[in-house]
Length: 117
Image (spheres, rainbow, N blue to C red):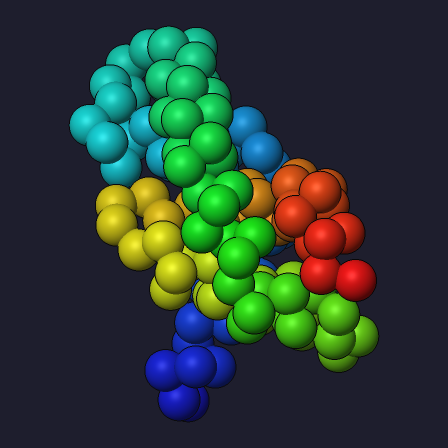
């Protein structure tokens, strides 16, 4: 299996996870405490909110992300997770990329992409 195929498989697993589980996973990546699950969820939500503000400009300016969104292939969502994670990198980047895709990259980038037309 190539590394691209492994990345797509990992992205699909993240897309199948609940948003709550992804938020907790994000908090754990930044040192959250497993002993307090409600705190973990709140920490993950705060981290994601901060990340999302930062990510909007980078993600929405990417031609690669824009082209993948316009592509109708079956693996589009997994490809988006990989592309966004590559753009943003860093700790928790893949988890945040999955959250952005689940929440809708199209909605996040609607304003900026409407200017492209």
